[in-house]
Image 1 (cartoon, rainbow, N blue to C red):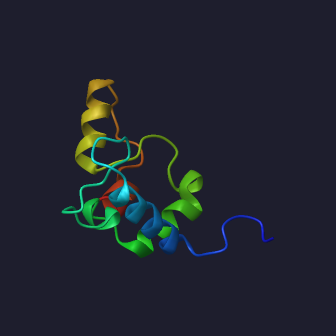
Image 2: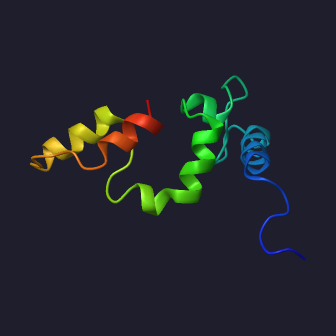
Length: 93
């Protein structure tokens, strides 16, 4: 038996998305069938997603999210700079 899941990441994401659509509406994890696929809803390119999960800890040292949210958090914490903003602007438009 190979270590880990015997299929590629994009297949796994699709499996999770489809599983959430199969679950009953009153159950945790339910995904409305009218919603577009997960990465599409998050506005993340699949190539970016694969890179991010492969290099997450080396790419991001602090907060992760959209540049707007990152700026909000840093402002509320009294930061002078917004660490990691370039990566967030690139991967989370």
